[in-house]
Length: 137
Figure 1 (cartoon, one colour):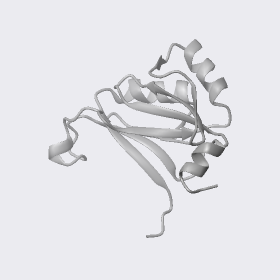
Figure 2 (figure 1 turned 135 degrees about the vertical axis):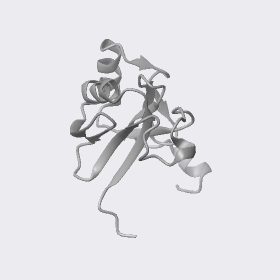
Figure 3 (figure 1 turned 90 degrees about the horizontal axis):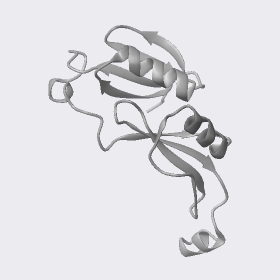
Figure 4 (figure 1 turned 180 degrees about the vertical axis):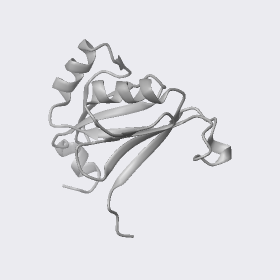
C-alpha cells in the first residue's frame, strides 16, 4: 500500500465545539468544517485529525453512536515540558503528569472535551539499562 497521508476520525456530538478545541489547544489548522464533519491538519500535508457527528450516515451503522473510549492519538513535539505548561495554563484537562520514560519518551496525556485521549510526546534517549534489557544495546 502506498500511503498519501494518514488520518484518524472520532465520532463526536458537537463538531463546532470539538473543532474549536483542537484548533485552539493543539494548534491544528482547519481544512474543512461542515455541520456533520470537520478535519484539521496536523502540520504535514495529508496528515489529518477528523471528526464526524454522532449518528451521521457516513459512519457505518454499528459505530454511529459509540463514545470515544479506549482510543488515543499521539502527537510528537519538540518540547513536551513547554507544551505541558502551555496546556495547563490554558485549562486543558491533564490526565497524567509529565514523565520521562526509560524507553525514550518524555510525555503526558490530556483529554479533549469528548473524553478522547491525546498523548503529547517528545523523543528522548532511552536509558542504557532499558536498551540492554531489550537487546538493543
